[in-house]
Each structure stands twice: as structure tokens, then as C-alpha cells.
Image 1 (cartoon, protein in one colour):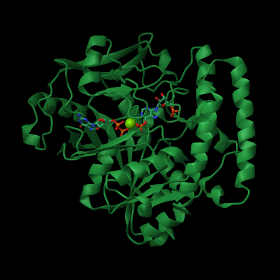
Image 2 (tube, protein in one colour; image 1 turned 135 degrees about the vertical axis):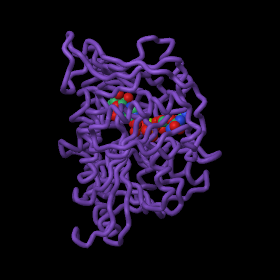
Image 3 (cartoon, helix red, strand yellow; image 1 turned 135 degrees about the horizontal axis):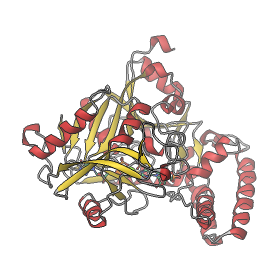
Image 4 (cartoon, protein in one colour; image 1 turned 90 degrees about the horizontal axis):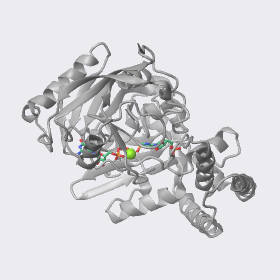
Amino acid sequence: MQKNNKGFIDVLVGLQWGDEGKGKNIDELLSNGVYSAVARFQGGANAGHTIKSGDITFIGHIIPSGCLRKDIELYIGNEVVVDVVSLIKEISQLKDLGFDIKERLYISNRAKLVSYLHPFIDQAEEAYRSKGGNKIGTTSRGIGPAYSDSRSRKGLLVGDLNFTDFEQKEKELTELHMDILNMYKNECDFDMDEDKIKEAREKWLLTLEELKKLNICDLSFLIQKRLSEGKNILAEGAQAVMLDIDFGDYPNVTSSNTLPANVCLGLGVPHTMIRNVYGVIKAYTTKVGGGTFPSRISDLAVEKLFQDAGHEFGATTGRPRMCGWLDLFALRYAIGLSGANKIFINKADICPAENIEVVTGYEINGKILEEFPLRLNEVTGVKTEKLAGWGEANFGINDKEKATPELVTYLNYIKDKLSDLDVEIISVGTGPDRENSINW
Ligand code: GDP
Ligand code: IMO
Ligand code: MG
């Protein structure tokens, strides 16, 4: 099969702590006609990817960001944990917007089902962790528990729906989940309202019936077929490198591997099919949830300026995002891990500070680090460099010539700092709309 493949797979991932604008860039990359499909290969409805085209704004949690392009197939791979309620809701929202995606959506029969009790367990685990002051600040979407069940081989697969033993398997899993919840109930305080659980179950069962009517398939087979037809596929990362379960600041991470390496396992394709890796950053950095954020802006008033100007509130949970300076030390680590060779820099229109900083190194007790630390809470200080800010004058521009000199200096500075790596800046975002970017 592999020898006959004529198409290829490109991957796009976030290189910071999420919310870099991946959804926008996926949608933007589809305008060149190179790709026939977008595939989610990990994560679940913890993602919130915003796409904006004119009057239409859509936030996809589980549906790939090719949904506003009518000729693009949408794939959900086997390493995705499928929140069926979100999935069905998004399909219906898209229909209302004039995009009936059912025929072009394909879901791997090996994808993992998020059960209606996973979000409750997620909350219970958080309540338990917060007793020790170690809350992760998850999105409460049941991501951790769904991946745990998958790894311990108790979970339900989307394809299980078509087998007669589904009911029995689901019953056994529910019993186990209830035992877990009752155990936590005795230990800590969380919302285990029986009416809410009943309501969640009813919704879940109803939406499972809808899921059964969708294209559930051997996605690896379909993708390999498409590649052999000469079609190219864009793999859409969720979360970001710094939230990777193995390479992020464990345990303040998500429960999946977010790196491009996981495209092979998350879609069932050989690594030889992967060509470019697009990496996405913002001109500054944001983070939601627990854990240390080394580049966080220490002047809270300045942080608030970025939060307000950049509308930095979670697309999934609505939580305010912490804002930090661009962190080149973390970025170099993320580029190394991901192999990103083409960089998108978003939010170049957002710079509400007269002077900005860039983090160039971390230190622990006065010692500058060469390697990225295992635990970010060990970091005692950061090295920064200062540059001039540029206000909001670059909003909406498409022309490189119109960029303000301070922005050009900043981008050249980043380019220079990454010059020993095999990367190029290819696009600079100047607003949320698919049209708001400069080819760099
Ligand atoms: P994702 O999770 O990486 O897809 O990013 P989110 O959708 O969670 O957050 C990115 C936010 O920034 C969204 O509200 C986008 O509409 C917005 N956005 C993306 N690129 C730009 C940009 O260049 N400028 C501005 N002002 N907003 C942007
Ligand atoms: P997108 O794809 C930003 C964070 C949560 C929490 C940690 C674990 O929109 O960039 P989880 O619910 O996954 O168990 O939470 O990961 N997190 C994200 N932060 N953007 C995301 O997705 C995120 N998905 C999870 O805030 O700190
Ligand atoms: Mg997001």
C-alpha cells in the first residue's frame, strides 16, 4: 500500500500552551486547494478552535476545522476521545450555518468514546487533587478519565456501538465508574447531583443513536486509499506541544501526545507519509489551567491589557487565559520536539504595551539552563530581552509593506533567534478572520 501512495500528510500543531489560533490557520491553509481533508488525530472536546469567515464564527471542539470548506472531508482519528454530545451539537450548529457536514465526516471505528460519567470523574479527580493544592485546571470534559480507560483496556470504542455486546460493556463500565465516583464522594467535595447524572445519561444515549447513523469506518484504510489516489491530508493538532503528556510540564498537561509523531498512531499511517510540520505561535503566549507559566507578565495591569485586547478567554471553558511574553526558550524546545519547519505567528495586531519583553532563557538558582527542565516549578527566574511594542496599527493588514517598523523589527528578531534551526516564518496573523494575515 505504502509504495503506491502519491499523496502526503502535512501536520499543524500549536507550539505553546494552546489557543495559538490553530483553527484559523487550518482553515486558511485550505484556501490553496492542496488538501482534500482535515484530520483530528488526538485530544477531544477539550479543544476549542475558532474559525471566522466574514459573519460566520464557529468554535469547533471536536469537528475538524475544515468544516467551513464544503469540498473538504473531515476525519476523526482513533486516538481522539469522542464526546458524542459535543459532536452532535456541532453538526447541528454547522447545519444552521448552512454547512451540512454529515456526508463528508468520517469517524474511526477505533476512536475512543467519552462516557457520560467521564466528565464527572474528571471533576471528582480535580476536587481530590485540589485538597493537596495540585489542581490541574482541566477543561472538565472527561479527557483524563477517557484516556485512562482506554489505556487500561476498559473503554468503549466508537465501533463497539455496532456490536450486540455494547449494552453489557457499557453497563459494566458504568458500574465501575459509579464505584469510582462513590469512592471520591467520601473523600472530597464535588458536584455529584443524581439528576445531573441522569440527564447526562439520557443525552448521551440519545446522541449515541445519532452517532450510529454517521460514517463510522476503518479510517486508516480510508486515509491510505485517499493517499493512493494522490490526495493530500492536513492533520490538525489540538492543545499544543507544551501540553504533551510526555514532554510537557507533567502533570500539568493534557492526557494525549500532541506532537506530530502521534499523527502516525492517531490516524494509522506510516511516518513516511508526513511532509511539512506547520507550527503555530502567538506573538505573545497564553496559558489556561494550573502549573507554572515562566513567561507570565509580572505586571498584572499589563497582563490585563493583553487579556482584554486579545480577548483571551477560553474558547471551551470561558476561563481567562494568563498572558505571558513570547517564550523563545520554550519555543526552541517545542520546535525541536515537533520538527516544525513552517511557522505561523498570530495576533501580531495585538500589542497593547509600549515596551515588550521576550524570554530567552530559564534559570534555577542563578544557573542558566541548557535543557528544558522536568519541572517548571523549579525555575527561579527567566532571562528577558526588551523590544519596542507596536500597538494595534497592524490590524487586518495583508501587505508586508504596510507592517509597522516595530513589528518588522520584532519578526526579524524572532527569525534571527531561530536562525540556527531549520524553520521559516511563513505567515503573520493580523486579525481573527481567515482573510487577516500576511504572507511573510
Ligand atoms: P486554537 O485553539 O489554537 O484554534 O485557538 P483559539 O480559537 O482557542 O483561540 C485563538 C483566538 O484568537 C480565537 O478567538 C481566534 O479567532 C483569534 N485569532 C486567531 N488569529 C488571530 C490574529 O491573528 N489576530 C487576532 N486578533 N485574533 C486571532
Ligand atoms: P486548544 O486545542 C489550552 C489545558 C487545560 C489544563 C490541561 C489539562 O484549544 O488549544 P484536559 O481537559 O485536557 O485534561 O486539561 O490542558 N488544555 C488546554 N489549554 N487550549 C486547549 O486546547 C487545551 N486543552 C486542554 O486548561 O490546563
Ligand atoms: Mg483553543
